Length: 133
Image (tube, rainbow, N blue to C red):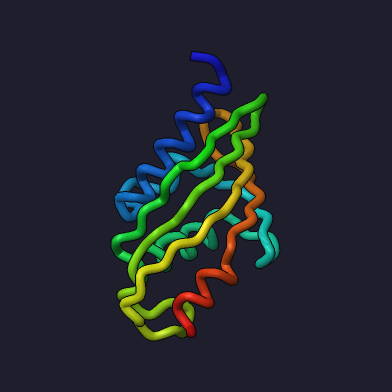
């Protein structure tokens, strides 16, 4: 298996874990020195874990569908569509029982078969619109 194939496989397993509510340990996929770059600013391992677990708690049927997965060198680009039903409190918004769907693009940097860094562009505005209007 090439490095690119191995890196893509890691992201596929990470997404599968998300579809199971992140039942596997985050340490199996994410490096302890992880750095995430997003509109929220920089986040580390524990903040990523908190955010992901809060999402799947509020949207227990969350499903992450891989639309595209492209690998080159130590980077993997994921285009993803996320779907789920808002069943519990989410960042101060009471459950609406609304089905949501939004997309995102994430660039992951992989080292030693762990995600060490990522840059995300998630359509959070669409998510908020769907649960607040």
